[in-house]
Image (cartoon, rainbow, N blue to C red; front, side, top):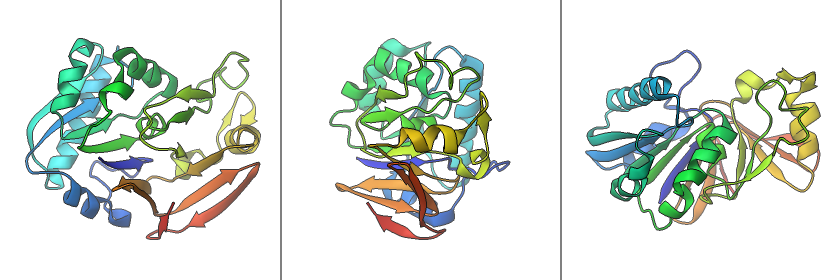
Length: 238
């Protein structure tokens, strides 16, 4: 299995895939031509949004030179077909969205078990990358979640990586939720005993052949401290 755990493969406001940090080069090396692709949603009930984002990702991949023998969407309309879709796929795209909502759908369809032994390519986008971890760090995202004592910040994930990713650093670094700073008041205190990889859009973690590499600008939060560990175009073995 080859996995691309991205913050986003797109830069803000762009419709084409970002080729920075060798992303498209590595993706072309990994994905067969043509390929059987499955786009896995973030919200099983938001059919219109899912179809829109799935189409946008497929079209962007085609503009970047990829081709499909099939391109299916997996969401609440066809969850009972998850096993056959995953087993047939050569490329799985895990959508971005609300982490707990996507996580619940993944658990509902048994995606972790379905992906055991999978030998294709995975592209995680934002929430999809976050939910790929063995134990997912799901920081609060929506109003009320940061102050909700019952909000679960650690969830069971797909087990594709041990890395916990916080995406979109370029756009969320100053975010305030429920009066709390996303980083200084939430993620950094939550990092005691944990390690979080903070990625801007255009950076990613590449996992293949039992090795993981961080490509591009990145920061690490660990035990209450945050530091930059890589710059644009850097490759850092993990």
